[in-house]
Length: 293
Image (cartoon, rainbow, N blue to C red):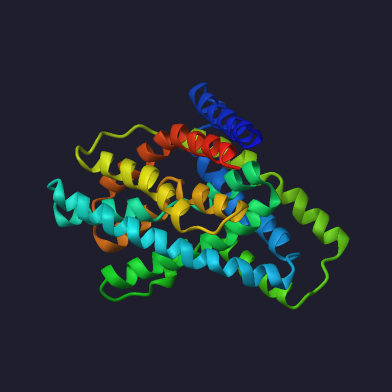
């Protein structure tokens, strides 16, 4: 039940962000500034400080999570697209549904949730699961785009570079000076509360898009964590897979929508409303994981 309490604390921070926006304490531009702080400073510091001190054996062991992540994303993308077409969506909206069903917010939201619910070990494994999401984004672009560079949008996430640097640091067994480690950990400690407040200040209810919404809700928030439970490894690493698989669609879906010629307002509706629904479904997953130990 500790994990459930940790997630309830995160929900309280999301609520604080909502209230702060409502009363005017945070303006319309505040989420953008908070997100920039997290993406460019706090989260890279948190990720590097976590990964750089991993034993090389753990780095190799966690590589399996990358493959699991890609597999779960691929299956959910295909199921989401197929169901979307079955319920009568045109190809463009079905592609948007498929991407939103498979490409989860495994970094920006997945990191703090895994850290809060499962501790530092959960964050370590989540970093590798998120690598799989990055590869899935690149793969989706390669399959659906015509021309262009697939890395331009998928590598705009500085924590990915921090994770790569941390892996190299760990494999080379380089020491991390105490002052530098303390500074990175202090900066990284601010990532979780700032992310949650920013999320609360960013959430908007959009106009519903008919049959597309229940498809994404069912596949991304329902099928995905069940699939993660079925194919994930045993033990607490498997719980990381389930948690990450339960995350709502990534904001990267909005970038893909622009690059692939999809309808951005449809994708925005799918992302934001599914994120709101996830505030209910993810605690259920956390409670279930606590009871399955």
